[in-house]
Every structure is written in C-alpha cells, then in structure tokens.
Length: 442
Image (cartoon, rainbow, N blue to C red):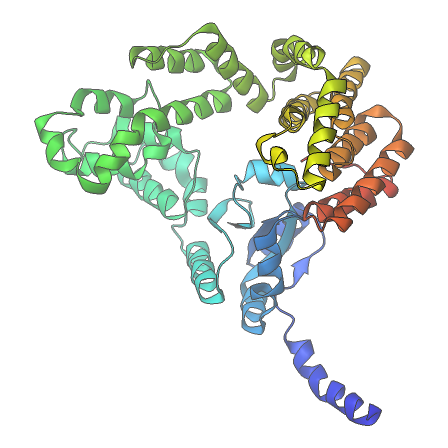
C-alpha cells in the first residue's frame, strides 16, 4: 500500500511543481520597481490585510492557477503588500488602495498604469489584468504621458488625450490637469453636449472655485444643458454638490491650503446648509489629520478627548456589560434589548486613540493614549478585539512590552476559542511583538 501511495505522489509531483501560480517577490517596493524596469515589466501590487477573507480567497484560488502564474511571470514583478504593516500603510496611502483586495499596476518609474479591486473569478480577473498590460505597452499610456505633461501641457490635443487615459486607468487626484485643460481648450463650447459629457466623465475631480465650477454655475439648468443633462448624466450632476464638497476638501488637503477649506464652508452655507462652529471644527480636525499636521490636530482634539474620557463611569459601564453577558448566558430575553454602552464607548475610544496615535511625539502624548485606551480595556473584560487593541497601544507607546505581549496572548487564546476572524490579525501582531519588531495600528 505504501508503495502505491509513493508512486501516486511521484506521478503527481510534476503537476504540483507546475501549478505554482503567481510568484511574489519578498523584497521592498523599491526593489520590485528596479527589477521591473530592468526586465521591461510592470509591477503588480496585491494589497491585502491578514483578516481579509476575499484576499485569502484570491490567494488560495486564482493566484495559484498555472495559467495565471505563467502570464504573470511573463509580464509582471509581483509583490504582496500587507496594507497594515511594514511599508504597507505608506503604499496604501500613496497609491490610493481603498477596497481589499486592491490591485495596483505600476511601470518601472512607479507611475500607476491601471488599478482595480475585489475578489472575482479567474476570467474576470485576467480580463482586467490584460487591460493593465495593454496600458503598460501603450506608448501613450497614462504613465508615459505623465512624463511628457510638463513639456506639452499647453498642447490642447495632448492634454485631452492624457485626460482620456487617466479616466481609462481609473486614476484619481488629477484636478489640476482638468482645470488646466478647461483654461486652454478652444474646441468645446460651454453649452455643448461635449462639455457636459466631459464634466460628467471627470466629475470626481471637479472642485469649488475652479474653472469647471464656473462653467457649471453659468450653465446648469439652462435650456441648452437641459438637452444634455439626461439619464445617467443627470444622476451625476445631481450628486455634484456633495461630491464637490468631498473633492474640494481633498484638494485643500493636497495643497495644505485652508483658504480652499474655507471656501468649502462658504459654498455649503450658500447652498443652505447650516454650518456652525462645531461643524467647522470637525472639518478642520479632519483636514489637519489627513494633511498630517499633527500639532494642530492635537491642539484641536486633545481637550475634547480628555473630557470624553473623564465623563465615563468606567466601573458602571463594566458592570452593565457584565450583566448583559450574564443575561445572554442564561438565555434571558432582556439581553436582546440591552446593548451595553460599554461597547459603543470602547469603539469610540479606539477610534480617537488610533487617530491621535499617528501624531504622538512626546512622553505626555504616549501616556495619554495608553491611559485613554486602558479605559476601553477596563470597561470590556475578556473582549479579544479590545484586549488586542490595548496590547498594541501598550506595546507601541507604554514601554511595558512584556505586559503587552501577555495581554495579546490572552486575546489570541480568546479569539481562537470563539473562532474569531480577528484572531489572524492578533496573531500577526503578536508574532511581531515577540520578535521585538515595530507594529502598525489598524
């Protein structure tokens, strides 16, 4: 019997060796870019997180297929990037990875050629991949046109071609190019169908106070535009006020310009929205956080954070939480109508600690975030997620790394017993802690 089993293994071995799927590099993005440039290939980034089920599905199915592997070997230098660890958070931010799994294709100079996201069947995945290859080989790809833009930006036909390619590649963050094109173009009258279609095609890049905004204000609702703002285009234009609030705020963050931010508030007020000081403050908190102006961000939120923590009766919240657990364990129906405030407050605490932790610079900052997070840890005993969050904060800022590891180990044991998906992420952080390595909060 053993001989037969061995023979089967020997016969199967060549097939196993062939079906290895995508070969992923183990180095940095910089090394992958250098290799891709030397071999005239594209870089394929598979952005994932350890807790992401769809990411695991792709890794265990599509990425292992032989035909997929061969195609990737011929065309790409592939790199798996954990968006929550190592250089992953910076890559996620730089290349706009939002949904997971998120796929980004770069040329050897690091310019985005194409992007898409989500778990999907092999056929659909490879159709998207083939588009990336086509764009990469196109002499007029978005990446190559980007290199020419500074020299040819006053050429109307060139800029329009560039914008078309940016749209095809699902690029973002090219507001300045849209605005520049509208300044120099001479072929599209404002009242034309072409202008309406152009603005709809690039609606995500339109901002308040720009040329596109002027054109919209002059023409939206006019008899001429009523002919063209129809069907799906009408829906885009109906959503423009909201989308332009978001895109203009993003633009203010990109430019680090509060005058643009103030214009967002002005336009919101003109549109009838009630903009009070609390809303203004929230917008500035968001602005300072996203533009990474840490000291200004902390100055706005620190006292509010402290007041919130001081307002909590941690002992009572813990008692209510434990009572809810007891009722649930006994099958008491009252537990169904009694959602503990401790859970809501712990979620709020971690959200504020996570945001604040990005700008920790002083010993007082460290002490504050550890103390704030401990309130959540104290009010929800035995919750693996909260325990791991506190362990991570304690490890990163508290100085007591042995205690952090102990709490993380307890959290992992609980997660395993309860069959929590979070357990994978807890284990990944725990392994880094035991090796004395840096961890990223998530």
